[in-house]
Length: 62
Image 1 (cartoon, rainbow, N blue to C red):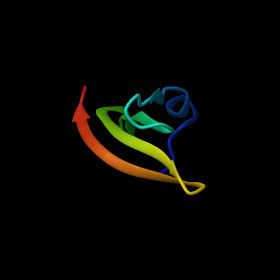
Image 2: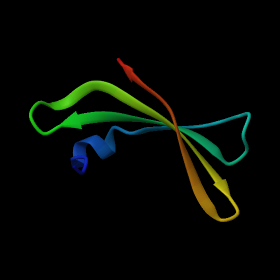
Image 3: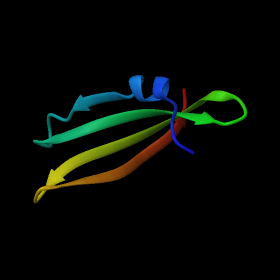
Image 4: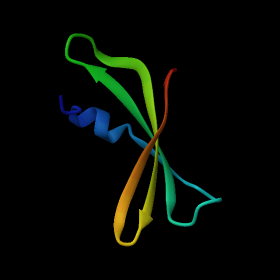
């Protein structure tokens, strides 16, 4: 399932001081049945050799 447009607007991105070019990304999860979930996916995004490498860090309840 694709995230709805309003979910994309609510994604939070923070630069990582310890990793140059790295970002922490918080993405709220959604379900087809209920809309916005109380779960948040936390990712790390780092540029390496011209590619973006994404790692899942956590999935937690707000």
